[in-house]
Length: 99
Image (spheres, rainbow, N blue to C red):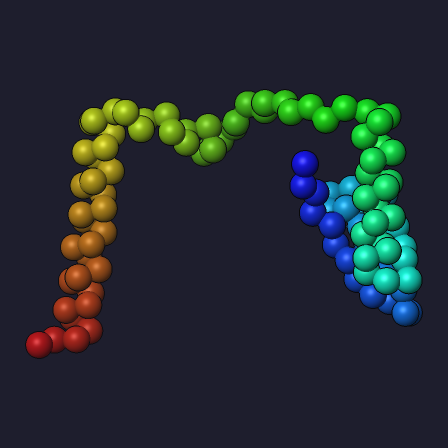
């Protein structure tokens, strides 16, 4: 499993922090030492718990994502919206740069 770790140097020491879990951090004299120390902390924590994934019901506009992907009527409506947007863009462009 890969985990994003932020490493920064301050006052001559390096600090490695797991992104999204600021309580999981370690310091070291070098970047490699800090990363190794935070890796060890993660290994300890992985023995004490379990990583699980949960599904969350989408709300609002996000709930519509993919809902109409196989609907030909919705696809035709969307295609018409896109055609109209391009027509409008081309009309504005023609006004701005007449031939």
